[in-house]
Length: 317
Ligand code: MTE
Image (spheres, rainbow, N blue to C red):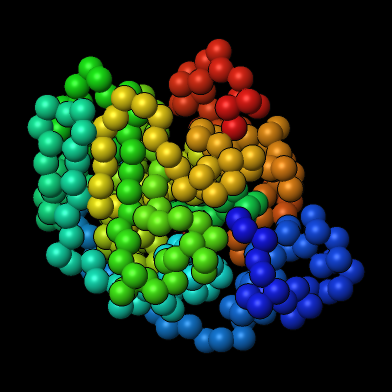
């Protein structure tokens, strides 16, 4: 999402000169370049090393599109707390301590409460939901997440009439995440996100505790993260520790970092380009080509378009 500094990524290392001299083409080529140069050269360990999750039911919300391999999904990540390159989180988050863990759900609610991970795992039946996952950078994957609708957790604390939005916050600890500093990552910490309450209550909004039949690996947001499949991936905040029901629109990390490029809504939209690249097509990993048509609301329009009726989606990007 950031234009990387020369010290981090030298285009000449991975991209032909003719491509990297053209900024637009260069940005489109970065993900593929990482996959080819880095991923192919270094042998990797197990894709997942989590605990198997039992009693997981299939969900009618799942796509029948071909799933992306776990190897790609767990080694091509955005998790700036553990480094800004796609292959860094899988290496740097390996010893991330995710137990004990609590998520505080507070604010404009009748019953504020801290949930242990054990309580979160038992709050509602676990479902496997195979969702398309589209990053604002232009790449996409198809992931069999495990979890349940975020609404189950929100209903448990009984939002009051004052609650209009939901603010989310990630874990942040410089001891475990020495790179989670604005001068190193280019964004502020802790990572924060937000949704309107009706978006958060939509059944597709998923509180995820696992993928591919197991608990989440650290690099994918262990032990619990948000997945909002009709929005760009940066709305899917990882390693959640706080959820606060509030009356005003919450701040969000990428909007704070660059308001011209990242708005609050961030709905996947092929007709609203990022200021620096087109959003009409996406790169469905592991393909090297950005030739897969982007779908309105990432293909979930029939379920979620009603949330935005009467709204100017070009203005509210
Ligand atoms: N959550 C935190 N805490 N920190 C991050 O850097 N990156 C976001 C989102 N959640 C991020 C985060 C972005 S930009 C994307 S695209 C998705 O996580 C990536 O999720 P994945 O690595 O599981 O594909």
